[in-house]
Image 1 (cartoon, rainbow, N blue to C red):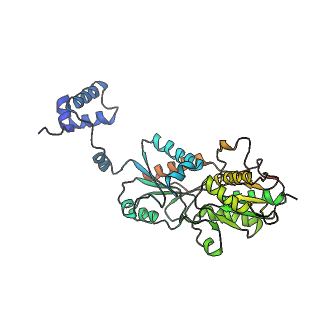
Image 2: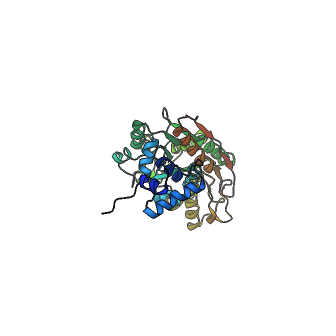
Image 3: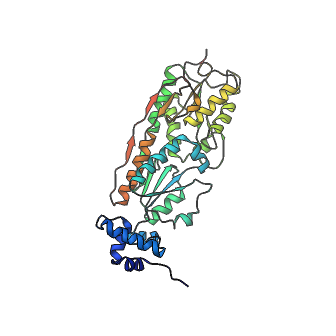
Length: 350
């Protein structure tokens, strides 16, 4: 039986030392182009594919991989333009550092906690999570894996890349209040990933462990006081449409004059439901969102929303992760948001 070719056998065939052959494979400028060609030619003759990447990573003490956790199933993450833009910002930075990204799904489809405890990661970014009792977060902290969280939770020793969800939603609610709305309802993203949807009562509210969801609820209440909230099972257009039909398909005197959706995707679903029910936006009902997402299917409709710097947020999270990998602790960062008034908000019907 033929033996498997090794780096040493390649070096011997090329007439160089094993260390020089290793430098040739790594692309080191210390090796001349002629020597590199001899090494690569010898490797091709012997059928040698290159040094074992796992062995190399063990020698360096790094895997060359950053984990990115998303809060929901990947199906929903890839349907959400904000999640896609955030991950694009992360991969753009990691790619420039020659580092790979391992994408890990939310509750459904995520590896077990035992597996997460074994996955070789240089750092981890909790990209669209914010769940304050996530067991994966605790396990990775116990392992000493450097961590970056986007919009929470706030934890000692963990870098936070944040936006001011509460202030942004407060500005949005104040806009509606100033143009005359008093009967509003919140369309909430999931308070927990357990598949529940429906009105949010006090007991359910107490389990709102997603920091961004809680802050967006509080921003509305800063202006209107306690208002009804309806929770969706996932952040998706069809969930927004189903919830919109529940909220809007009622007698006019019970219908909210404005629906404050916690994401643009959910708001798009409410717009769809309003159209199905023959309601005009904003003449019969105002619909507002949060994110400033690119939703080309809305056509000329311009959603009133809170715009957040999603790409910048992803890039900042990735840069922070790379700083941690290099042994430096970057400061927490809060990025600004801004109110954008579009065509979907107007005075309440008289």
